[in-house]
Length: 225
Image (cartoon, rainbow, N blue to C red; front, top):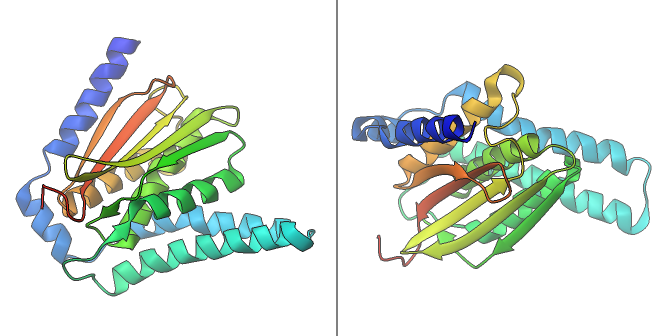
């Protein structure tokens, strides 16, 4: 089983590496496919709906926490939509660590397992909307694969001039099937977005027992710029 898993991960890793420069240029000039945008809006939208229902029966500090979480999810939707409607110019940056903490908090709202987050201050050379989409897709897949009694770990740091996002889960290593092939679509979106900004995606076996997804993006002030 482990050999098959390693071969599967190798094929996915190669598929990210094989994206051509021509494809990168076309991605930067073409409109974002509607299906991909809708896919990435599902998680924050579902989070808001869940929070609104929960807040209806709460008051005091609990209600304040729910409202704060709704604000985070709404800001994620806004960042994605702004990115599509108004294409960012060069030099756009985003605090990867801050967005990762927000994304993990949003995921934890509807995920019954444990989400551990370890971050260092890192600024990525990519627009916030695309970083939100990357985080949302990888986290959604990780939580789905780990299951309600599982564990997900989020690590953000900087290495060799690159902003690094590493998300690992305790699932079966290949992830649980998602409705309509969303897991595969999500990984494809992550690979496309990372490449668009001069980054890369790497898949491996997590020490938690499941899948480990590492996304590298150029960091502000990094040696790769």
